[in-house]
Amino acid sequence: MTDVGKNLPDGLWDALDSMEASAHLQLSSDLSPFEKPIRMCYEAGVMAPMLPSNRSQDSTFGTAGLFLKRTLNDLRAVWVLLLKGYTSQAGSVAASLYENALATVVISRSKTASSELQRSSDGELPWGAQELSKKAASIWVEEQKQNEAANNGLEYEKTWRYLYATYKWLCQIKHPTLKSTFHDSEATSLEPTSYVVMAAPDLRKENLPVKCAIAAVAFSRTHDAISAFAQTLNPDRKKESYKDFERRMTVSSKEALDAAKTLVKGNLPFTIRGSKFETVSRSRIFKK
Image (tube, rainbow, N blue to C red; front, side, top):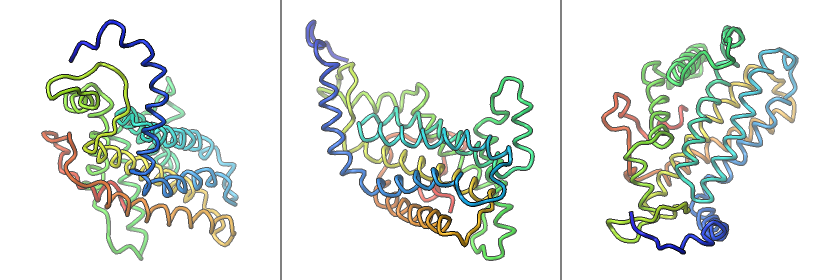
C-alpha cells in the first residue's frame, strides 16, 4: 500500500467514468468472441417462456420463471461488469447466477422441487450450492440414460464435482480470500511492492483468463437454465418460433465453447488448489 497524497483523491470518483469508458473499448475487443454467444443466449432466454406450449400455465413454470429471470439479470450484470473491468465483482455476480440457474434447472426438471420450495417457511431455497449441483447432475445423467442417441454418457459423481468446482472457484472471488484479493491489488500497483487503495478497472493481460473463465461459466449455467425450462414446457418443435429458439441455443453453445477454448488458456492466477474439488478441467466448464 502507498500514500497517495492528501489532495489526490479529489476528482477520482468522476475520473472513473472516463477510465471505465476506456476499459470498455479495450475489453470489448478482448472479450469479443464471447459477445455474440452471450447475446444469443440471453435472447433465447427471453424467448423460452413464450414458446408455444400447452403446459405454460403450470404453476411450476411460474416459479422456475422467477429464477430464470434473475439468471438473465445476473448474466447481463456479469457482462457489463466484465466490460468495465471489474472482474471480481463480475465473479461475485456469477456465483449468484450459478445458484439461480441451477435452481431453474432443478425446479423445472424435478417433480418434487417446486413443492419442496413452497414448504420453505422463510422462502429460501432448501438446497445449498452443492446440493443444487448434485440434483442437476442427477437430472442430466438420468436424461442421458433415457436418450438412446447419447454416446458420451455423463457420470454422476464426476459431473456434480466438476459442476461444483466452478462454483468453488467463483467463491474464491466472491468471498474475502487472500489469493483473489492480492491478485486484485496488482491492478493499481505503482511498483512491485506498493499499490493504490482505489477502485479501478483491471486491464492487465494476466487478468484476462479470469474474465474469460467467468464469462464461460456464466454462459454455460445460463444456457443450462434456459434449456431445462424450455425442455419442460415440451414446446411444439414444428413451430418457426421454436426453430428460431433452437438455432440460438445451438449456435450460442458452439460459439461459446470455441471462445472458451481460445481465450480460457494459460494458468489462472488463483485456483481452488488444496480443495477436494481442485481437479477441474476447463473443458468441463461446459457440461456438454
